[in-house]
Image (cartoon, rainbow over all chains, first blue to last red; front, side, top):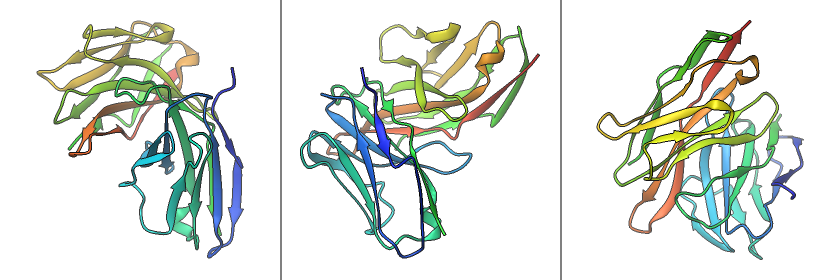
Length: 115
Length: 117
């Protein structure tokens, strides 16, 4: 079946612009996670959802970052007034049951570059 | 608070020799532990996971890991390296955080496995 997809795969924007990154999880998966990965580092947790409810947003760096999953499926991560330090790979992952033992299924990521 | 330490940023082996990638963790509860692999220009893929059943866990492509609670370790091993094993490997701990009980995975910074012919 279809895996996790993310769009766009690459995004180049100018400082101060808003960007919206999309994640389409595996159909029926309960949980959806967003991560940010800097070069040479592991993925860093940003936020996650169970169905449409945002369960934890403690990893969002500041109030320029927000996320939603209004119908419990597709999710959008929005970064307002982008800054150069926001440049990174943004990854999403979905899990089938929302359980601690769940495998995370990752998308290919969106490479964001802020000029 | 949970944390993960991958003790080596790079490990270099010759094809056909054993592989050891080291991971230590700290966790306040009973965690689940995972190893993920990332090949160049590919997404992350599960290699294996420990979920409080058998302490020796077998994964894909001949990899295995042993959960040692007394040492808070979850090292990844493979008896004989293959060229196709060259990739970035991430150790992950997941447990409940805070009173709300969110399941938040924490990733190590990764170990790059280099395999020489």
